[in-house]
Amino acid sequence: MVAQNIGFAIIAAMMIVGALRVVTTSNVVHAALWLVVVLAGAAAQYILLAAEFVAVTQVLVYIGAVMVLFLFGTMLTRSRIGRDSGLNNSYAKLGIPVAVVLFAAMALALSESFGTEKLPSDGSLVTTQQISDQIFGPYLLPFWALSFVLLVAVIGAIVLARKD
Amino acid sequence: MLSLLAVEIPYWGQSLLRVLGGLVAVLLPAGTIVYVFLFKMMSFMQSRLGPMEAGPYGSMQLFAEVGKWLQKEDIQPDNADKRIFRMAPIVVLMSTFLLVAVVPFGPDAWFTDFETGVFYALAVSSISVLGILMAGWSSANKYSLLGGLRAAGQLIAYELPMVLAVIGVVIQAETMNLQQIVVAQNAGSIFGSDIVGNPYVLTQFVGFVVFMIAVQAELTQAPFDMPIAESELVSGYMTEYSGFRFLIFFIGEFATAGVFAMIASTLFLGGWGVPFSWFGWTTMDSVDNWMNVAGPLIVFTKMMVLVFLIMWIRFSYPRFREDQLQRFAWKVLIPISLANIMVTAVLKVAF
View 1 (tube, rainbow over the protein chains, first blue to last red):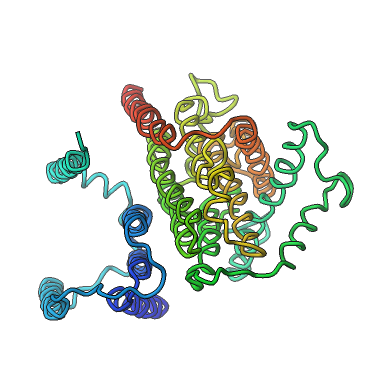
View 2: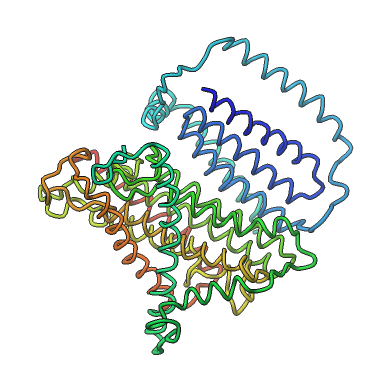
């Protein structure tokens, strides 16, 4: 268990540094690349929790698709090299209390619902098969609803982007 | 676990072997591919001899080239974002090393026995896009940026058909573990005959073709080499790179070709295995230990066949136009692979 804790601490420290750099760096592309560090750290934490499928999905969706699209967009529009002024707008300070409140709410919710409960340490893995049985069994309707929301978003994007 | 020829190796020894094996599994195919295909086969197809001076039939040419690159001055453009400029080639090479980690080479000769092997391979292969975008942006060069953006657009478009083509195999094998996919192919049978096992290239031929086209595009080999189109963009995102940084990109390109060919041979050609019926094996545990030595050679042979296909197409066809490329991915490959999934699923339930 000690090795996992050390691994957790190192990755968590890396994620915190990355998250702070995302909001403090003065270059949009640098911010996006620091965000990659944070998301990769999250994937590594999932691996430590023996949640392979979630970790791989995190890499595929967030690093492989979302961040690439982020970078693609920023590079197409404002891809200056060097420092960029005026990245913060006048509401920047408002972010701090919002972040604190969110953190408090999430910490409270987690400690209230799980308390001192621990994950079984006998290494009982949730396999991909079990996940798919859950998604295509009891959670089929939410799954369909989510797919429908995504479909709506795709159609909306096409409607907005088409000129004719 | 790793009982190579029935010799028990301690855990640290296994780990050391796996790290060394990973280096060999990335660098050896890269060197072989460059010499056999890029130097010799390309020359043959263009009616010339290729390198002949360094060593017999120019076989030492590769070492000469590497030496030349290592000697060159390390140039970084004045306006470049230096740190990201230096990181980019390493990110690309890292993606290749992560990719080889799931390829099985024998019953015990694997690097990681990952439950979600195929899924993992598809996920980490997309990390190289990040490296390419970083290279294109940090070079502070219009051509580099254009090359990087083209590469990103192309890789996103062709990742989808690749994932969809693999789903057919996953449905048939009922697992995402590459090791078990190998076993499912070699222990299987077609119409009751188990002479050749059940390599999925036969039952999933559509998936195989779509997968190989997508691999060709992911590797940005011609006819999909718009990101480094030399007549339009100098050499795309690699324009500003010289010396050993260019060398890393170059190794990354051909090592990734080799690793993708290994994954394709694992998914569609039966991987390290021979049809189990030949030796009376039935399951994974009954496979003899000598397969740990023969397995890597079998994978290597299959990889060479598939890389030959990739290179043959690369040297034969002219470049697509950018709009043709996107239309081909979204309007041809994705519908075909979706139809393939549907047919596979129906047949799987029916039989």
